[in-house]
Length: 326
Picture 1 (cartoon, rainbow, N blue to C red):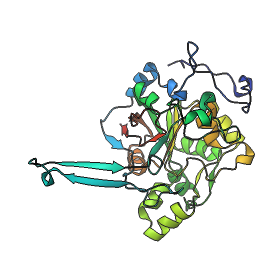
Picture 2: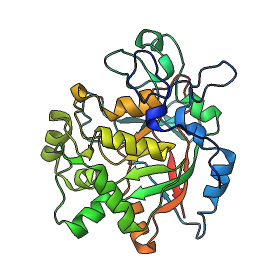
Picture 3: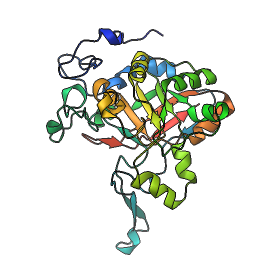
Picture 4: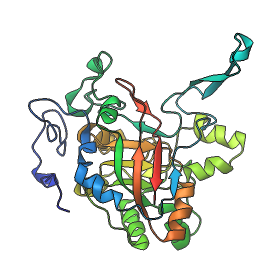
C-alpha cells in the first residue's frame, strides 16, 4: 500500500516562524482551515482497512489500566474516586448508579494536542497560544472522536523483554533511565517487526509491572514524592528517527513516554516535538502486560487497535478505551 501522505525530508521542512526547524505546522491544513487532529490524519480508510487484516484469531485485550491506578498520582493530581448510588434509598426502584471522578492524566491516558505547550513560546500544536487555549475548544480530544476515534495497526515494541533476555536485569522504572533509540531498533529487529507509516507504536518499559508489584510506601515514593521515570531518550537522533517513520501516535507504559523530567535546555523534549511540533498524540501508562505475554506466545507483535477517547468538547486528556485485537 502506497503512503497517502508524502512528507519532505526533515532537513527540507519549511521553516515555521518562532519554532525550531522540523515543525510541521500547516502540513495537514485543508481549505484554509487549521488542522486540529495532527498525525491521526495518517489513519486513512486505506490504512485502517489494511490494519484490519491483522485480525486472524479474534482474541482481544484491553490496554487501559484500572482507573483506580495510580494509587498516588504524581504532580499533585487527585486520586480516582467512585461513588455508588443505591436508588432504593430514595425511590421504589431497585437499581444502582455510580458517579466517578478522574483526573485524565492520573492513569492510562491520551495527551491531547492542547495538553503540553512549547515551553519557550507557550504555544500548542498549529499555533494555538496558551492564552487562547483556556478560551477555546481547539485541539481538544473531541476532534479525534468526531473523526471516528483512533483506529489502525498497533505495534508493540517490547523493550523490557528484549532487555531482560539480552542484557539482564532492567533499570528501575522509577529512575530517569533513558532508552536510546538504538535499543528500540534492536528490539524491533529481535522481534522481527517492521514498522510502517501510520502505525501506533507502543513501548513497554516496565513501569506498570513495577507499580503492580510494589508496596504502598514504594509506590508513594516512586510516583507522588518523586516524579522521575524511565522513558525514551530525548535527543536529535530520536526526533529524526521518529520523524522518518511518521507514526500516527506513540504510546508507553511509563509516566511520560520520554524519560522524565525532560532536559528542556537541550531543545529535544519529546512532549514538545510530538504534541506541539507534529501533532502526534502521546499515550502514557497503558497496561501492556497481558499484551506482552500474548505477543510472546504468538511470536507476533502487530495487531488491530481501536481506541475511543472520551467525547469531551475541548478535552485535554482522556482514558484511551483501547483494545488490541489479534
